[in-house]
Length: 124
Ligand code: FES
Image (cartoon, rainbow, N blue to C red):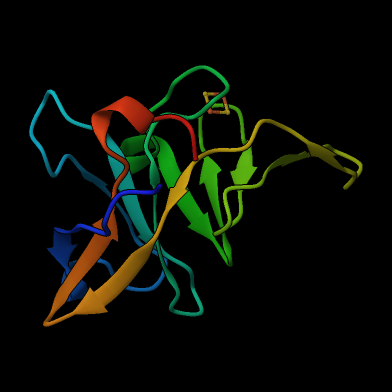
């Protein structure tokens, strides 16, 4: 049986404007590292912050490009669903490792996410 949904406040809605990515650690240094970002079209996303390639922090190294978050370290790209790809110099898009995305909502001026409990982190 899955646990109950627990919405945690991450950032205020007006802190994450379209095209913006922010680091967030809602449980302090011992908790999960999350990046909150908003597509240029306005969709808000909460995902694990560490790039699955070489662990860059996407709240620092992440740049929003349209509907994707791009890791500026080596240009892996992540969709709002967490699908990882990289576009080569010829324009071919190759699959790369995916990243966990967390359920998110905007409520009472806050971006809130349902983060997995400690024993289930890294499994979404
Ligand atoms: S660390 Fe993110 S693409 Fe290499």
